[in-house]
Length: 335
Ligand code: NAD
Ligand code: UD1
Image (cartoon, protein in one colour):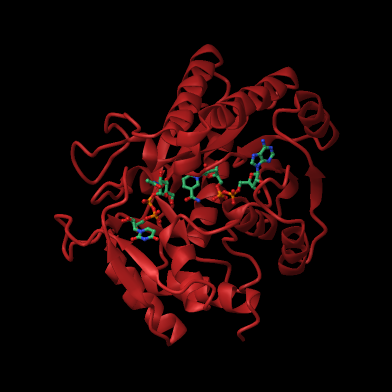
């Protein structure tokens, strides 16, 4: 199938490109490089042995998107392009509504104009908000507690209306839990610009010596060891979930919201312990107060993905840490 990946040079888009290319799909990648580097394209070409089509451009450029959809006879779009910092979404909300919501609308208008009706949207577990029960299933009420989460929920709602009005569209909104890890080659992985906000990239930088220690945001939660628990999912499992979703939208019309998680929560200390084994070095840590806006624990009920997509995550926490470390060590020339 001919597939457009918006945000195709980003963390999740690049790993998904590898899996889809290996399955024989024809890919076109679009990215404005606001949070990625051109070098990722070279790495993708090395891993896949292909010359992937790439456009440097913005999803808000409807004319460009229409041109790409027509020129490459695109049949499905995976819409990864978006901004994802919770903190920045609070301090600069209009940037997030413009990029994530207006950007999505522009893309969907271009798709409608040239009759491309299959879409996978990168949503997030953050749409659920404070858990009323756990694990979150897809019918759990949605009430995001930050601006980033609201942009994701608004796009889901737009897509629900689009699907209601156009029953021949096929849409999957994939609600990712906490993606971590890297491709087994160590060539591609998560490359946050500046000081990382998220746990795994921060731990990687402590292990490589770029940062002195990890700040543990709270050890007094009502969890098994007092630290926050999350449903970490290996990015290659996530990538395979997208391949399964492409097959699903090819067969079914309508819209589905689907969790992509493992169903297994791990604490901050679980992750540190596993990472120390991967890197064979100690991770210095200092316990701090709780981070504002953090939830103690959340994780996915992953049954819907298994039933509808025939997909479930298979890679465990140790592999997530091993692959993250391999990527980091190669990046920093440590191996
Ligand atoms: P990322 O920042 O690594 O990748 C996003 C890519 O989109 C980047 O390469 C960026 O340059 C590009 N981009 C951003 N705005 C664009 C625009 N207007 N036009 C064209 N390109 C644009 O992020 P990621 O981790 O790969 O996340 C991909 C998607 O998944 C995002 O929509 C994100 O909100 C969502 N998501 C991510 C996580 C996570 O923890 N990584 C969790 C849940 C949901
Ligand atoms: C964060 C976002 C969430 C987004 C997710 C993507 C916030 C409040 N939430 O979630 O919307 O969908 O990333 O992966 O930013 N931790 C530390 N020290 C650190 C960093 C994190 O102790 O330096 C702890 C956190 O308190 C949390 C756990 O590690 O308990 C995971 O944190 P993180 O990786 O930032 O992910 P989330 O908070 O789940």
